[in-house]
Each structure stands twice: as structure tokens, then as C-alpha cells.
Image (cartoon, rainbow, N blue to C red; front, side, top):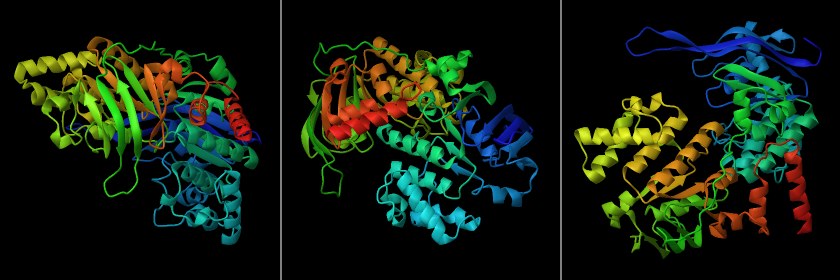
Length: 546
């Protein structure tokens, strides 16, 4: 090991014991002999789809296996010692001091009953890295370095009193506070809007450069990791597919799987201009949540046409999902009306007919919680067939098989449970369930945001193919402009409950832009080196111009 090598992993093997029903326990290996080195001050990106072993390998740098996972072989050398041969006492000294961790969900990682400062300095004080006063001083310096507002006082707030992007930066400050040698960033920006993601990425990159810490950056988004990593290791099913500099991986990938990751989101959907009467017409909708005194939607008007897709785009809190709740009758509007297939819909769900419910379907973001885990795929898809059309027995089973073929899964999945499916397969089942009702419009609420890029790409292609064959219209809610470009015919940009920009895709995505649309479009990560610096400079120049 050279003087500059802080982390050295050799032939790492990780697995877990499975307990199949009616069978003896068996060992399943999930990481198969992975090796790599990481030098001080360098960033290694771990990229791959869900289940590739990214987080499992990253946590091995702390000598930790979560959820019943065991490190079964290999060596993990940290600062010249093999931590896998260390006892628990040594590992406790390591974690939170020499090696720290930033998780994907900051909101779930903080204690809601304690102030931020108390949690940020806890590891530094417990490990004896700093006294309480010095740790607090360092935390304030990190808050300022990470671009947090009011760095002197933000530590006095509770987690719920800051935004998601701010909380992610506070967690980064917590990881950097003990002056560690290595920080493991586990999908730190995946749950953030693209506009917030830029701020967090910039803060993380600058903090790494300023402190000289080594870092592992885990993500499934190659465009994101390309902005912060010096080297990238591509993983698939627990094996190393390719390893190289960021420049080589992005511009000259050697393996087919890496090339697929680089070329993802290659869909180019040609927009269709409206020719018929709209299937859905949202007219001057204003709405507020029950028990509140302020509106969350302000005079919103949009149309969706048969066989076409309207993408509703904007950051969290812009009103996208609230608009969906109004359309589905879950939130009656305070003003305005909704026309659907030529008839005025009842504002409240209780007043809608079975035909209204059948023709207007919804697919949710989290397929995991949208299906009953105790029901088979056949039961899940079959329920709307029975409810809306009265199909039973052989006729119902025949239609279920046809729907499984439409979503490119086949009847072999008929008797499987949701827990036996991948994320992409679960979302396909939700699509089949919506199609079973033979709807005229499907509201797709962030249906690809929780999926890996390759899986999301497959879902978008499937939706486009189904749209052609079924002539179904989509209202597609998303904050991902790449998805919008891939699937939309028209776009509504929402900001603070209002429609900021609206029209066919070619018009909305063409300059001149209003300030918010310009910010949104410029914040979509590009698969090129130096993109982050360019967009930060663009923001600075735009701000200076104002």
C-alpha cells in the first residue's frame, strides 16, 4: 500500500443467509470478490442499478453489514490496518471518526426531538476529536462552507424546520465535522429536486476539495457522479464490470453494460399537436387543503388530448401532485371545474360515477406501497377486471394473461407476490392494473423517479408503446426534464401553485425562458465533465444580470 492509499479493498465477498419456505437455509453471495484502491483526497464513484452492491460495498468501508448481511471474505484496509480483523471496540473508534457516512434520506436519519447542532457535533465530541465549543465552531464553519443560510444560528433549529436540501447539507457537515479521512456518500441527492441537487452537489464537491478528505460517492445516476468523481467503478449484480477514470468511463466505455448506462434516456419522442377535443380540461382551478387558510393552487388551467401526454413539471411544493389530487376528486377545488370526455366531473370523489372512476386511472410513484403485499400479481391485475367489467373465471384469467403480455412480463408472473418482483416489474404490474380498466386517461405521478435509469428507460418505452396501441392519454407528473423530453407532447411548468409556462413541447423548451424555467432546464445533469461548474457559473451570471 502506497503512502497516498487510504482505503484498500481486496477480494471483498459479502452475502446473507436466505430462508426459503420449506427448505433448509442457504448462503447467497451478493458481492463477488471486488477489489479497488482509494487515495487520499480522491473521490471514487460507485455506479450501478439497484441490487448491484453499491451501498453494501460502501458500508464495508466502515466494517459494517446491514440487514443481516455478513462480510464473508476479503480484506478492507483503512489507514494501514485490516479493519475486518479488528474487534468491535476498534470498529466503534473507526466509525464516526476516521470514516463517516451520509445516507440518502437525511429526514429519516436525524432525531426529530433534538436540535441540529447537538446531532452534528455528537460524533466529534464522543470520539474526542474536539471539545464541544471547538466542535460547534467547526460546525458553523462547515455550515457556511456548505452554503447554508444563517450558519451561526441554523444549528438551533430542529430537522423539520429546514428544507430537504438544507438537511442534506447539514448531514454532510455532520460527516465532515470530526475531520474524517473518508466519507461514504450514499445517494445523497437522489431524493432532491434538480434545482436543489445542484446546490448540494456544489457544496459536497467544494467541501471535499477544501478538506482533502477521500470519498466514496454511491449513485445510480452516471451524469451526477461524473461531476464529483475522479474514478468510477461500474457494478452489476455484485461484480465489478468496469473501473477507470471518470473521463474514460464517460467518453470511452469498454463494456456493453457501461455503454448502456452512458446512452440511457436516448428516447426521442416526436410531439403530436392537438387535433381533437381534449379528453381532460382543467379550467381555472384554485384549491387549498382542508383546515388551512391559504391556496396551494392558483387559477390553474391545462388540457390533455386523446393519445397524447401532458407533462406537469416543477420542483417539490410546486403543486404537481396537488393538481392530481384535485383531478381525481381527492381534494375538491375551491373554484373552477374539470371537464372529462365532454362531461363536468363532480368536484368530490364521492359524487363520481363508476364510469368516471374507470376512465380516469392513476399510477403512483412508489409501486411498493401501491400493491397489497399479500395478493398475487394475478389478483392485483384481476380486481379492476371484476369490479368494472364483471369478468370471472377463465375470461378474467385470459385477460390477465393478455395484460401481462402487454407489459412484457408474461403469464409466468401470474402467481408471484410483489416481494418477488424487481422495482421495474412492480411498476409494470401497476401499469397493467391501470390498463385493465380500459381508461381514457392515466395520471402517472413520478412513476420513474424511484427507478434506476435503465429500468426507468424501459418503463418510458413501454408507456409510449401502450399509448400507441391503446390511444390512452397521460398526465405525467415529474421533476425530471430528461423524462419530459422523452415522453411529452405538451408541458406545463408549475411554480408555487401556478402554471408558469404552458404549451407544446417544442415551444416550452425553446428560449426565451422565464427565470424559473431557465433555472429548471439548466439544472438537469448532463453526461459531460465540467457541467456542474458551467451551470454554477450560468447561475452566477444570471443572478448578476438581475
